[in-house]
Image (cartoon, rainbow, N blue to C red; front, top):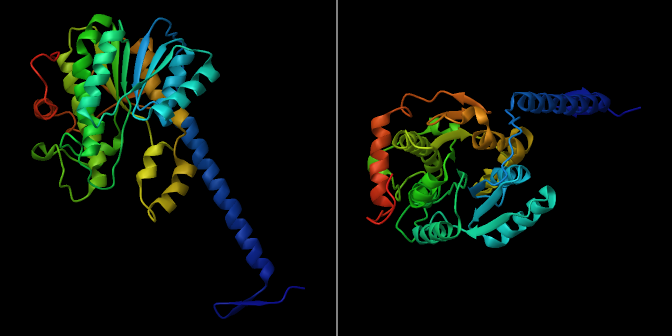
Length: 337
């Protein structure tokens, strides 16, 4: 026989408490499983069987997360994949893993820190000097700093990495991209742009009150960049599209400080996409034949989606472009778009 327990002044048999706890545990498991199953069946997958033999792909931020899984997929299709990484040791570990799992040894690791204009120029010169073509350029690298960090160029680090760096790199590789056609540029943005706005007077927010919010703004600017770049490249053999990969269990969440990170880790592990699932839309934009002539569009789960009226503001996108040109210190000798 069980001894009675007093709970809030009421005597209850312990077996009922154990049964209730077991019921809650089972119920919680069923709910989480149902949510994950729903997320799985609604997750977009790239079903294209297109091969990428004799194609050259550059992926930034390719040493982990969705960048790594994107690189693995394209390597499996036969592409020459250039992993543009800030950390060369981690990049080489990723290369070894991809070679082992795909059998494709045509994987290169090159140093690229998108928060440094010097590093970007060195990387671009290396690519222009050593590569004969770029068939796909994937702007995947991203960061979400939780405190203000200013780069050696006087730029806020999140905006430097997520926008100004890709903006400069695209310019510096443009002549090679045009000679390589047809080619594609893919920009990893985010639906989180809807939580922000873009202040043209503070495109380099080195005095932001809420540094973590800059990530959302940078994703908004990614969309402006995509749309304006697509407009400027109309009539060429280059297409440009952007995407929301979904909420993904990737390294970017490690920047969230404790104690906020503690419950977030549980949410991420239970409900977010895996990096493999998160890479699907990027791969879709990079390889699918049906998108051969599609440009300036936004995709979620491998399907084209609409943007907010603010993100469709072409005049503001043009202004963001012009401000960015000054911030990245474009030179007269740099390729023009």
